[in-house]
Structures are given as C-alpha cells and as structure tokens.
Image (cartoon, rainbow, N blue to C red; front, side, top):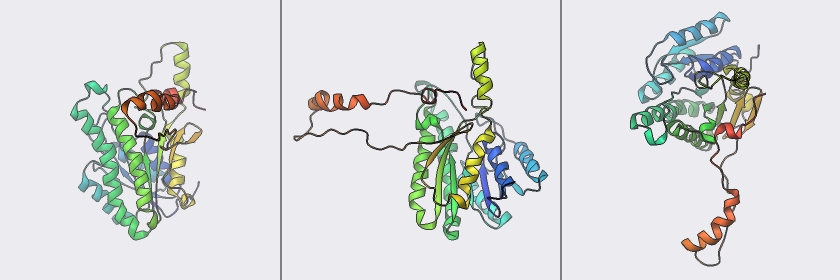
Length: 304
C-alpha cells in the first residue's frame, strides 16, 4: 500500500459513488484522512441520503483508514464553509480539496430551461468556487495545499445537449488556472482532471448490435478507479511542481490537455474593414478553424 499521502487530510466532494468514491478510497489507502462529502442525490440532483457516504466510510474503516462524513451541499456558501471547519476540527488540518460533486440536467440548448441551467451551474461551477474559497484561507495560513478539480471534455472540446454542463466545466478549468496563479505565492497548487469512466453518465450508450455490445464491454473497463491514481499524485508533495495544468484520464491513458493560445494571425497596414476581413482575414484563417467536434470525435479510438 502506498503512503504517498501519509499525514494528509483530504476533502472529496461527491464521494458517495463513482469517481468521487474511488478517489476517496484511493486517498485513504495512500495514507490520508478523508472527509467524504456527499448529499446522496440522484444524477439529476433529486433525493438526498447519507447512505452512500456511510458505505464509503465503512469501506475505508475496514482497512483501518480514517474518514468522516459531511452531507452539506457544495452549492451553498455556508455549507462549504462548514465542510472546511469540520475537516479541520476532525483531523487538525486540510491539505487536499477534490471538487468532484456534480449533477446532470441534459437538454438541447434551444429547449434548456433556466432551472436546468442554474441547477448545473450552481453545483459544478459555484460549488467548486465555494469549496475552494472556503479552503483558501486555511491553505494560505499553512502555505501549502492542493486543489484537484474534475472537469470534462464536454467543456474542453464539446458535446451535444450539455450547454449547462459544458459551460460549467470549462468555467471550472478557468477557475483552476486563476487559483493556481493567485495562490502560487502560498505554495498552493490547482490542477484539473477530465475523467473518463463507465457509470451513471455513460450507461445509456446503445448496446444492440454485436459491434455496439463489444464496444460497450470495452468501455466498461474504464472503471472509476482508473482516475484515482492521478488525483492521489496531484494531492501529494511529489506534485509540488505541478500546477495550472489540465489532464484527462481514460482507462490506462493520461493526456495533458491544451489550453487556449493563438493559432493564426493576420495583419494589415491599413485599418480593417468588414469587407477586408471578409476578403482577406477570414480566408487566411479559415483553414485553421476548429470543426464542431464532440469529445467522442476527438477521442475516436477505444480506450486502452
């Protein structure tokens, strides 16, 4: 068993199932005391139960790990403050925050309701800010800390029917970069992981033809646990030089994702006009235009 996080304290949001559960257990196995935050709701944000978190706590304690439960909502500012206080009261400090909690309210953009938009933004984007901001004061006092934010290729690349989720996740990537820059002076790091995993979010993929069935069986090998080692590493002191980065994990593949930089430029000796832009600038730049790719168009090969 690795002890790369020995003596550390981690807060993992949305840790009652899926990727959050896998990360919480992996961090506990690596020596960290873990706060398991989970409100126990469905993927669409309905319901609420401490049972999922209790099951994770029992699993951690079964191998003599240390864990406590918090059932507050990341989308509530006071609840986020309470998570950090509880972690410090329970274990004396806080070293790692994993912003993983999330819900889905998928709909085509032209049919998306304000309620669907706000529900997803509040959990993913506001929640990541609230929890990170609550931990920032403690990290600053300690002059140490690591934020690990779960983002998505739906935001980094694009996807159909997920304007709310995509916008939130791309916003979290920008939030992470800002945290990394603002808190570098305090030795606080902030990185993102875009995880791939078979679970509630992918289990609706068709599996009717032999080819589809074979592909789904291969996709099922992308277990949530495949994403945990990178999160554990990023929370460790061994990653003290890694900050402001965006990674993606896909079964046994790890990708370093690009960040926006200029691709092409055009210049004129005179002022641009709409007509010269039409006739010169756009024709020069259009070969470098991005197509309307979805995540699965870019990651077109089966995971390996």
